[in-house]
Image 1 (cartoon, helix red, strand yellow):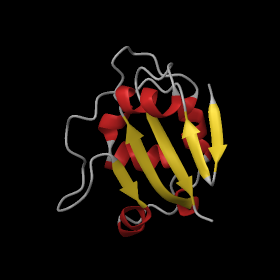
Image 2: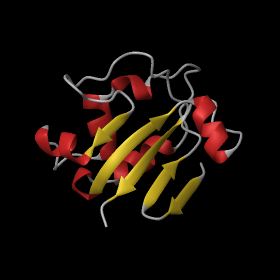
Image 3: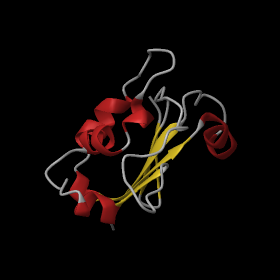
Image 4: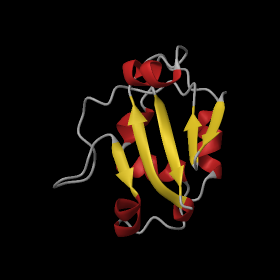
Length: 114
């Protein structure tokens, strides 16, 4: 697994994730590719991990196309929601444009609170 720490952002690379073509779990103005700190707070997820928050709010981010998910979930399970400012899903094309090859399932970016 590749991890990249830049300006308070943790990139969880090599997660083999599903397509983000279905809407997110939230309603009214909630982005299907972003989980904001406000959304995490409003959902009352502060005692949870990032993995649990994604499972509850955007489970489609975790659906595997190839049934292969690498160690990325371990990183998500180690991050507490109260320390997260935002999580973003990038599909394979966007991840490749931003970070290069090797992200066939996309990535979840986690931005930590400063």
